[in-house]
Amino acid sequence: MSINRIIGILSLIIAPYTCFSQVEIEQEKKLNSLLTKLRKADSRLRSNLLIKKISNLDIEYDSIVKHIKSGIYYPNKSKTGFIEWKYRLDSLNYLCYVFVPSNYSVYKKYPASFILHGAVMSPDSLALKKYINEKSYDTDSLDRIIVYPAGWARSPWWDKKQVNNLNYLIRKLKKAYNIDENNISLAGISDGGTGIIYLASFNITPWANFRPYISNPIALGRLSQETIFLKNLGNKPFLFISSEKDQLFPPRNIEEFLSKMKKASNSYEYYLAKGYKHEILWIPEYADTIDRFMDNNYRNPYPNKLFWQTDNTDYGRNH
Image (tube, rainbow, N blue to C red; front, side, top):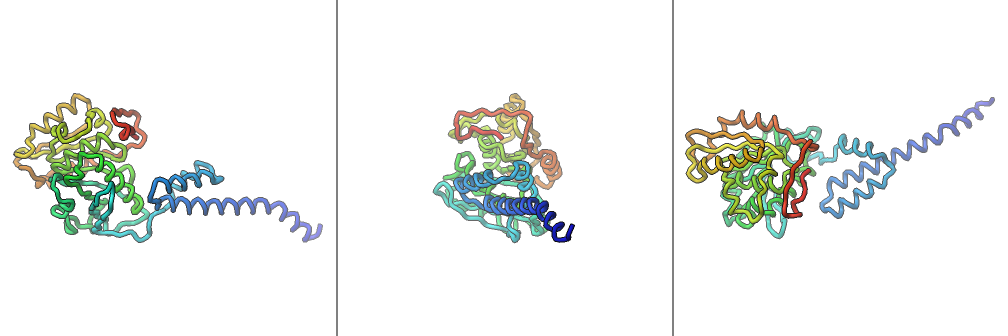
């Protein structure tokens, strides 16, 4: 058999596999391109169109999942340090401060902590500037991303506008940075801590744990226009810390609320900072307690049990 005939026969055998491999490569390129666009999509309509295109590709479901989990679809040059976000949502202008570790790497997943400030009934939409500035954290030593949303009288923490606001910020953060989706915690100080109870009652899914400090949850009965279903809070762990000499929100208020939490069999830890007034100067003393709580309470995206009660279909989802 001549060498030319042998080459001809081999080409007939190899050609189909070569073509098949080329098709696979092209499909992989399309998938990566669509996933990248999906990460950057700025509307639900745009996201749905891209998802439809992805589902129409001739690629196995498991392969798509593998790409999503292993792929890097984040900007290569994300901003670090102190960042100010200004945006418009629900016909209101919002402000948010973000602190990103200086050594941030796109190849590493980062935990994120959202912290809600106090005095939320201020008429000033920029009141956040009074509490936080670029020197509030040393980003050279940060090991997580810190997010400070803004609240004020037109958008207090116990309002559905803030449910939308925090969801918006989580999506924005996930597009810009490699976030550990199962390690996003929500903390709040004073009014911020009170607001956590409302937010956890209507949007518990994205959060790993909750940390209300010097708060007054018992006041939500008159502050919120929505019904608070206490047993909903049992889906995630809580860490409450109050000050012994707090004249604004006396410990008896939080203790009354915790008795209801206990009756509902909800999971929580409670500490009373001795000798302190309505302040958080005690935080250094409880730093280890706070770190341990966060380390031990990651989000389980597939819990064995779920409980969700609502009288508003806008809040009809838990996981």
